Length: 178
Image 1 (cartoon, one colour):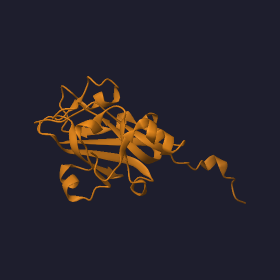
Image 2: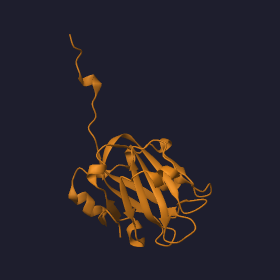
Image 3: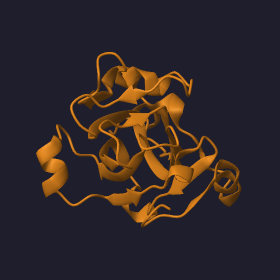
Image 4: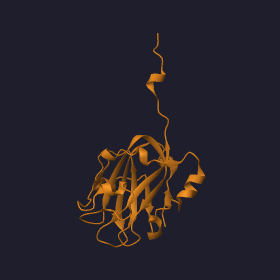
């Protein structure tokens, strides 16, 4: 079960608010990166949408994935899909707007939210609700997989974010003074 969050289905999350949408189109894939991913099962697999393809950690069970958004967003929930076995992530720490974070930072800095996932929480139809007050203005999200359910390496098939884009200021709408 997810700790510090409520786990539910994607349909329940969407019903909670009509303004909550899948933010996949706002993720700038070219600017996203991962530390400790295996060259044979790379980070890019999380964007493909095929549960048979995974991002796998290389040296141990830890992964540090950073997602950049095209514009600021308010995050409501996260969907992590992984094999429902020992390779699925167990403890995940989320960090908001932390540039150039590394593994040492993940241990030293307070997380915006801690998720503790069970094997049933990493299904395609499950979401973990986030503490909205910690995710109101997100440009960059770091997802640290601290451990899994006992395997040597961790695997993740996909990660999706749900929430809403924040209104932006268009400078063309302002008139020149004077």
